[in-house]
Length: 110
Length: 114
Image (cartoon, rainbow over all chains, first blue to last red; front, side, top):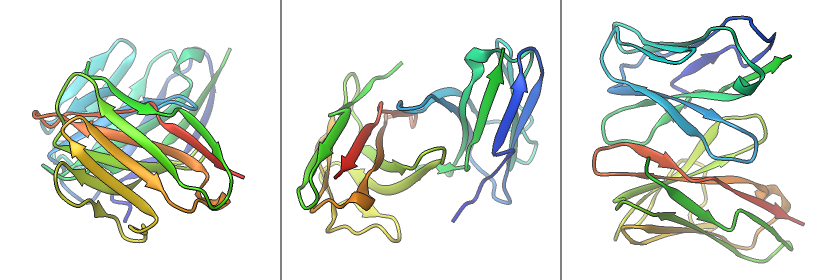
């Protein structure tokens, strides 16, 4: 069962553009994580958000957790080719396995 | 950050043979490890949850007799794909959860069954 809806699934943009990836659910999560994965490698944790309404920044990446802890967004400012990859959101119910969204495949062209 | 390793990183085998994949937490103890399967350009699909010293919990649709999981210690879990067939070809990823609840992923194992 896919508890997390992630959109868009594919995104192709030019260097310098901004983008937002959305992760939505009808379930309340104890925390939500964002990962970035490159081909042939495992996912790498970018951020964990825990508190409703929380905003975290990681250089050009801004992560927001919805007030009700059901949704989250990832905004990238001035995208660069190095940002290319598969972005995954994953929600956690305390103590249980992560529920992954379907992922957003991002391509940033020079 | 915590490190999780997987071995081998790539394996090619003939149809009908068995393949064992190891997942190790290198600098922390993991009471719980997870095994995922991933197809190209798709998300991770949870196969099973592995708890040290007890039987693994398999997700619906995952054959426990085909995908044998052993979690013999707090730093090692193994996944054995028995009688592998071409449709088992995939990218297998493990993760390990530390005492604080943080989850760290291994680099994955690319399995190709000829």
